[in-house]
Image 1 (cartoon, one colour):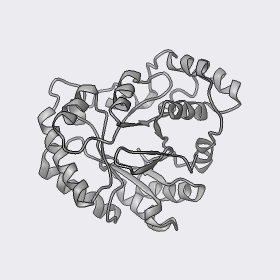
Image 2: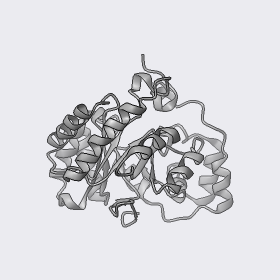
Image 3: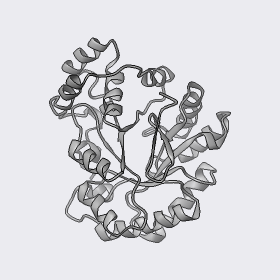
Image 4: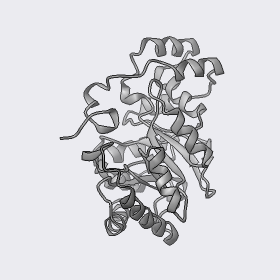
Length: 287
């Protein structure tokens, strides 16, 4: 898997498999980056909201691999909705990580997390955010720009007025919760889709039907879920600090049949993400 990549609309190559760092603190993140790089990972995903960009930077400096061999993604905080706030936040991310450039910069959400999927859609504000992203791209601070958690009309709002089209949309996409219409829309518009929580933040691991399918292929549920997303044409960024899980997640040298892909697309929709259900991306509500 480590040699496989997609090409973004601007020609930049992005590894199909990345390491997610959500819910890891700086120390855990620095160690996880070093572990991952030693195993073969070259794509690391973080965000301003994760509060571990400094840990990513420490891991980059300690891992023994040249910066240009790594692909680093971070995300503009969902609450930053003005040109100036975004411009300042980009410089802060670069400083925290100790980097001269970011490979991929993403708007973390179309709305602040406290208002996620509510009435005010922030269409005009997101246009201002995008202008700041475009200027950072033109200046060389970032090599690619994109979106996260944007629904189709959120994407259309950006595309209608932008000078540089979004190159990715990072969304929740996994077996038992796959936004197939949104994925198709993005792909038709040359926007690569990335899947975060591709193993449903662990909630799918005990799914009986999925376990039977994984057994059929002689793989783990996690491997089956990652392969499923990749066969849909998505980047996958499973989060783990465990080196054994990192290795397992990269061992994807098998193919799911077309019939089994259709079965997995139609698995009963997951209703409970366990202890993490309160997060807005899993249908919860922050108070």
